Length: 125
Image (cartoon, rainbow, N blue to C red; front, side, top):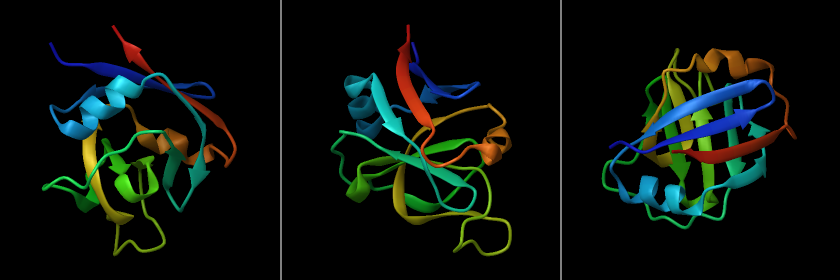
């Protein structure tokens, strides 16, 4: 059975299907996570206590709906549009990140979130 978690920010509940990867397992084992979001262009990110290494398939350019983990910053990143370093319409994060999950939630709805908004990540059993 695939593992799922829920990311709650303000009125939004994002259901994430976790990949079968080391990073996804590390995040799962650290849940629940409570943090505060930061923004960078059309990306939100938040710090965690998760310690992961860069995986072999890590990348900077994400697909819409990808959930990323930035190992050197110990942060979960959710890109949903252009960032300050994007070329054309790509979702380019600041550094290579591990993709640990996928959501079908319309992430464009996160545009109105502000730095400092609270975020909770918890298991869906």
